Length: 449
Ligand SMILES: [Ca+2]
Ligand SMILES: [Ca+2]
Image (cartoon, rainbow, N blue to C red):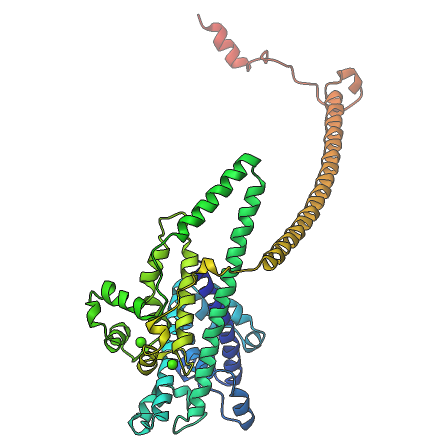
């Protein structure tokens, strides 16, 4: 859940970036009608000053953007907007706001596009390594150019290592920030959890508070009681995966075979997901979703910690991928063969007392602001009620006046005829059922036996 939320958050940041680029592109293509085939939206014409401006803005977005536009065009609401929006509105960013209305289905597809973008960046890394490894001749430049055609306006003939470096750097920076945000989010999650626990304790009487505290300590103990956790990325840990997940004989353990088995997409690298998948066995020793004491949000944080630790140790060139060479080098190190014990999440508190204090103060301040707002609203409400009362009083007065007038009128109507002496008013009709029948009828009834 948390994880999902976070993805959405990241996505919306990415999306707004896209919108900016989208708006820029559309502005640059001002002479072209909006309803043109979007595959023909080409990067802005090459101008010397633009070339330098473009250097650091992450060119991979151009292609990504084109696909995003294609998908957005499939969304009924957005398509209508796109065709009915004029240039001024686009410049003012009104179109960007419409993205909030893009249907969920389209967003999921956009998430998929984002993943594809990451995969394309992986290809770039490989191309760069091939060039550096002197395998330049083996690269099919035309095929690569086709896949990364957005590079064309920058360098029409070949990929230079510099071009690739820039793209790789921007991608790894994004991913690093993503990890950092996840840690921050987790920290806030843990502080909120502790805060709520303390708040709950405050509502209890002495006896229940003690019971609750004992229960809490018990759960902590229960959670801490687990089979030995292998050091992530160590021989012991990988051997356990080899034996239990792969069903192979531990005697036959071979790093190269292991690498190929778990390079699930077969691209010759362990990426972050492939590494994280290796820790599932260890994490199952620590976390069971059916246990009250095991928090699955914490499990995912532990998985992230493990992956970061291994990446840090093994990824020598810091491209966030583990090549077979890097992996084999790591398997010869002392840390692989005789690792220290792994300190789990609980042994490394997510926050300090000071940070918790600050967090709680911030919460208190927010609550105070809310209370202030609520007090203001209460005042407004009271004022409205007062006005309402006044209105009601006026209404009552009016009703009474009307009643009074009606009473006067009916008194006037029921007044005796002599009061009308000399007037033109017709005589009042006789009351009751004594109204005389028309002469003919009267006689008919009377003549009846
Ligand atoms: Ca792989
Ligand atoms: Ca690497």
